[in-house]
Image (cartoon, rainbow over all chains, first blue to last red; front, side):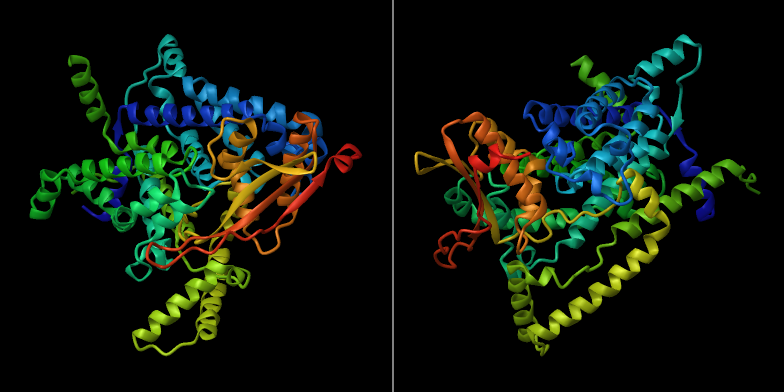
Length: 314
Length: 222
């Protein structure tokens, strides 16, 4: 089979919508919790309003002009847009007009990101990447109000194209692998004593533990620095292990070994531990949770169904 | 003989392939060194360390030469990525999406510590000192990732202006409103030098980027 045929066949596959729906729900939850925190801390005007209305940013002076800020009065743009984000994230969570919600949410969040760009972090960009994907995905075909409406109308929810799930996996691989390649500071190498994590944990902007404790843990931070770098470099293994799993009936010792060692599960387990570890040891906000929200995409719907059945039995 | 391919699956497969290719292109970790980067203490320290390493390996190069080469490569790779991504810029601008993942690529041993103080009856009192985990509203606001982004990104510049100054205005305004007894508010981002265990004592923290706001001026604002 030619590469083109294989590629076309791969992207033409259909499967249950469970993993795509799980990503949607988890991502919407992260967005909702993060944005509710903005309101609870009284930061809506400060972050999103123009300077004239009490904001820190200067969205009105941006070129090209931001349509959101041109369309609404300066005093009302921040609370209205903030309210809209909450409503749209809620709609995404319950799967109501899912694709519209995702599209409106990404456009709105993109405008708000430019109000004060320093407040928009890498993880917000990752969330917007995934929202764009959700516009084209079929996450609304499971665990959603849209799915109920479809059933009521007599339409099938059935199987959906699998390619959006593959793109979520690809996003994870790009994120981890290129983040690993970008770590060229000497503190990520033996020449800098593998001190990157130690330095990050001592940075007052990210620190959680007192400096004395971090110093006492220095050897452990060195091991974790080297380990996390290797783990990021190893991100393509995730793709390889998924490919080997998919072609497990074919011969090959490496394939058999990879499947026997459950490389995918091992990689994701290490990833989950890495993210949970950084959530505890560094002030990273929503980063670990938003990335973990993408993990269900690494599993075939049948696996999720089997896990759920096993869990219900137990 | 295998069955002929249907048109739509082929178009879709090509489109998805193109999307993946563009995302990888955007994510390419090309060196993007600019002259402004070299002014930062961490860049100076990295330059010295890599020069030393190269010299130890027998490659004779000075810090100036290495910086010059780095800037030349940086300029070329910035130009390449800019040209290659140009067709997709309108879409990226509209959705603010992209693939740039420098997650702690350069952990900074010359970090900033945000300090907020309020003057009451001529005496400066602490209100926030990063990374304290106090329960006060100010403390929770300063720890929130988006606010932290303002002082962490902008405050680390050589001479922070713009958003950093407006952040200070906003912090001061909040304190003046909540505490009538406060006459002045000071915000600064002291320089913290992190040394590794065994490298000796860390130097005392150095006052940096201090901004003072008075109640009188705040009250007289338009």
